[in-house]
Length: 227
Image (cartoon, rainbow, N blue to C red; front, side, top):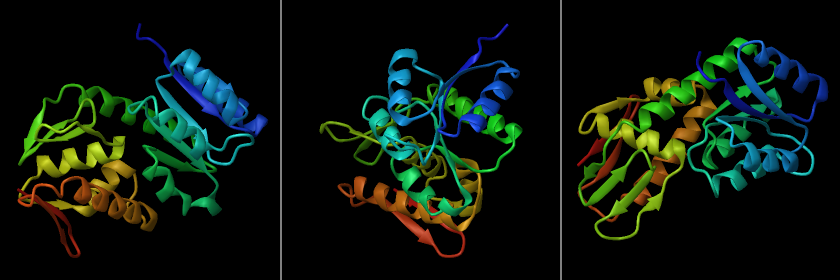
């Protein structure tokens, strides 16, 4: 029998939190439910969960602040944000601080479970990939680190690492914008597209020391990594 997935749920709406907890527990999850960000951070440090599901709006410490704190000590644990429909614009910020996915309330339990499994599968695959040389850079996908020549490696966010990985896989070819948005963001809507543009800009800056490397914008289609 496979081990249960340990999921930390930070949700200040008590009734909703309990419903999610009980629903997941009937599907072989172990759920740690916390009603605010401070308690969630302590629970994370104590129990080391496999995945985090964080409501954006919480008392004491909101979901974004909590994620930032966790990312200072753990760059790989998957984080899913729960957002109200009116907070859709916050999605871009959520991805930029290291979030891996988001769900708009209300959502189905089936959708949450599928997204959790997808993120955990990606994490497993990540550890099977070897070091990649890109011009004068070395990319360590499992550790999510990028190093220029003999300089110290810089830490990438989970999404930066996955986006760079897909660009490298399709090096010198156009990476279809819609395909990568759906694969990494789970949607190709306006806010996900804006978020992807932000990450492309960040990667360009981190690769700018080698002038032979370019990430080109192929208008109306996608991006192309040229090296």
